[in-house]
Length: 412
Image (cartoon, helix red, strand yellow):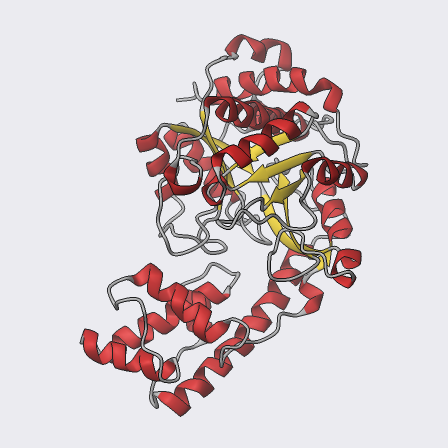
């Protein structure tokens, strides 16, 4: 981080009593979970989602990159410039060891025990916890090493199938990524290498057929997002010629991830996978009552959904239940694939989010906004460092958050 943070920051805002004059009860559109080029996303720049937010009247936007906070300062600056309130979040892939041993799927449908896990409203400006200054850098380094080995296997596969074709980890890191290199960057690099090798679409199809060991590509060369997904699926995932098992050290126990989030001033949050198109829900997440009890026992009082992958009725059933039980409930779009979609949150097949869920999303994001404001001032937020969450004071945090956002959106 370069610490060139534009002012005012949250610490410069008025005191809570004065701030309440800026409270606005209008329900705003929220997208609390997007990935940016600092991990991998559909966006070509950090500014692009803010331009889209203005066009779509999304007034609250949450950065949610894997294993990094390096986008925070620019995200705040762009929020000020475009009058879009920023939420400072992060995502990890952790492990629930007991569930893994028992073959229980959590929120990764293919890997028992593996658990996507978010932190919401981390301290901004960010100060790492004492003794954990290198926590994120170490995770990124281990993850990058796995991808470096994957690139080596890609080049070995090239030698067997398309001699002369090659990609470079350092080039990917320098030109396609911003520190953290993911396998989606590798898929993009492969597509670009094929494009450079020959610009004739038929010859490109022939190259992909050889790379896919005799199977013709389903995607056309001009369907870049679909083609990159196919490259990733056929070459880089399990069973593919360039697959490299992920370093188990990258998957920290969820309890360790939760502790880091709390010490970083954030609110631990469980991303609910919920139903797939076949109406299947993982063992860990069904039924909703059982999931709620498990999360409460783990000291987790916030959940989030990516509604675009869920049936609207199923989403409403879970989201309303959790919010009424005292949880924060947030929604987002991820945008962590090459596919560009609207920033406005909707359910599966583009079904609009019901007004009741829009309000739940708005009220929950207000709590996160209030939390960010208080922790920046050195005060206790919605969750304290010891894991205590002030769920009984949620309504107060909602009102304060409305004021924090109202003040931020008046800054010119």
